[in-house]
Image (cartoon, rainbow, N blue to C red; front, side):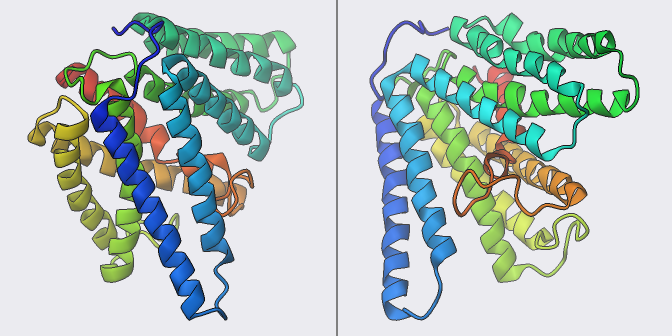
Length: 316
């Protein structure tokens, strides 16, 4: 494992990748301004808010990565806190469960402490085993049995998604990487970029060619054409990006791209199912133009652990 006490400089390949992302965002901004100038009558408020929010989100993530490993870990811990808080705010909970929620929040600093220590053994079992066993015991001590099973399921699942899954992004920074030009930061950028680009690719292919819906009751806009188009696009992009940002070969990068594309789609529709069940459009209003933080993390909550374990066991 890398020494987490060392404040690292941005590796050259990761620095270039950051520049490319910022360039693409700048291009999107220029295109929006050009379209607004040509068609001033059109309302582009939502697009404007989305692009502005992307500038803030990307800027914060890049600044934390550039500041060092510990700062990055703190950022991802804070993201987990916001996501868990938002999850608890949209899902109906019993009054007694609010006392149990304290212990769920307490899992966040502990989980990310294991990350900062580089203690993989505790990182990988702390929430799935110890928190899993602790939370229902705390609920039993309260003595409220009505709605017990549902409450246990909601709290456990929310902690697994928002804390355990997301913490895998931070642990990528702790892994030994045989590509010093990219470093552990390259793994994080690879995962974040491909996960978000997968959403865009599936949307674009779906708009251009989409005819056959996959699960219309959950997400009417998702089509087989969009899914397969995104899958092919991301797998090839991941093959090339993997060589540049990670120690993966082209073939290993393609496999990672397939994993990210499929799991990103699943994460998206799973959170869509949650919102449909709760009869809400967005999980919150934290991010202008995007909705809540869960709306932005839906794919990452699935791609992060699956990519991490693929890399950890087959590449690292």
